[in-house]
Image (cartoon, rainbow, N blue to C red; front, side, top):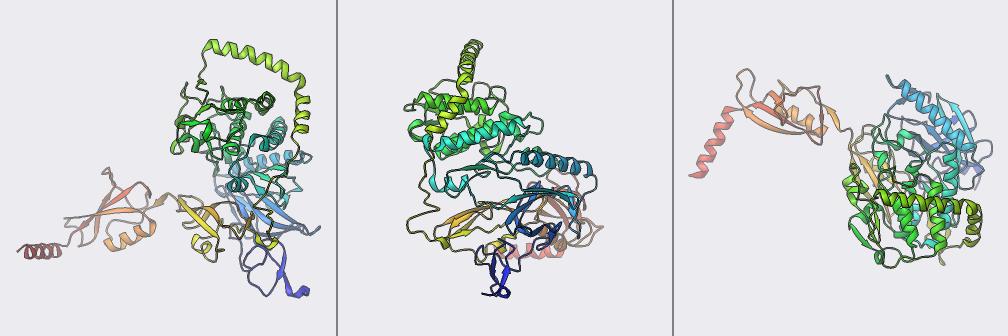
Length: 568
């Protein structure tokens, strides 16, 4: 096939048949373009990078598929783009919205500092390396290689759970990285199976998706993203302290998911979970270490990843396996019951073997004394333990049935399309026969109604096209607060049509008012009787508008006459 018969696909940066409307590699339609709020498809950055289609985005940034024009390699372009604080000009430049200049510039400096620090840590094998950082278009761009990885979430979806022996090398590698990340003043705040990745052989593990703190904290000036079942309790409050202990909590949740196949919330549904229902072969000490790391009160929780790692190493050498242990998870204390975070209740912490985590003063003194002895003992041989652990834990090539099977063909692996930013009606068309979209809806101030705001697995994730794949998507219901149209002195049919279009609930009450014509709204209020007028904002999911309409007396009389006739 000659060069003129090929075109560059903006969804994967592969050269494909120009006569085909759909890419044979990733399934992207050649007419697909980025939305106006994003960089234009096919534009360039400093004549160094070609910008392709949007890969993913959140409240802090957007990631594009890109191409390094110097080397010809495919890359990922991460752009600082807080949509709620900024807008884009036709030139591609970002400008802060009115009254948002300070927040926009402050967060941009934080974004730049974060990634400059991470770039200095490129030597760490478990970090996805940053190739370049650019400042242009009045924003910041971070260039990553397009490494073909599999999310831990996708792996666990296939394999459900792993033994401690199989998974501990991953955990120790991540902990080693996090110790160094924390020493550089960075807290991840988003540790979860969605942000942890494996290579194609599932032997090496990687950490990605670092963000500035407001993105990982609820009720801040920016659109936040938390990971239910993994985010720490303090991340649900903007006035709570966060630190290394925040990542400790999330790492414990990740380890719990790996070992049991279930999240803390899923385990909490049956307050008492017998050991026989969990994964066999989990050392009692490992469960105890997880217990300490899951304390809701940050002051009682394991404070650092180094302490968390030391506990796992110590418990690993003990070799004691759980047999009749009973683990108690308190759903309300975990702060995950119906998504609400309650206040700390002492004495309701996770328990092991029926021993409460609530501490008395005497028990605390004994614990401190024993802890000092253990610290002195372990500091002496911590480095040696780490080396021995790595020797003992030889990389074992696991059976990766979702990547390599005996009769698996290369062309059965496909790249999942990114649905984010696409109208749901459009995304639901022309799906592969084995892909099913599981839809949830939520209000979103930034996205129009009907547009997909999140998906899991993310676009670009490889999947086996011969097996069923459930893709979880969240569709925007539009903003929760809407501005009411003019209500008074208008025909009821006109008013109700506009309210229906806005998704506002209403009730009609016929009444008498000699100053208005028939079927005209003469008064409007809410459930509590408070008057409400056009131009005021209302919550679509909670408030109901009561419309008082001048009744048609002739029509009412005719209806009564018909009813009387029917009775006779």
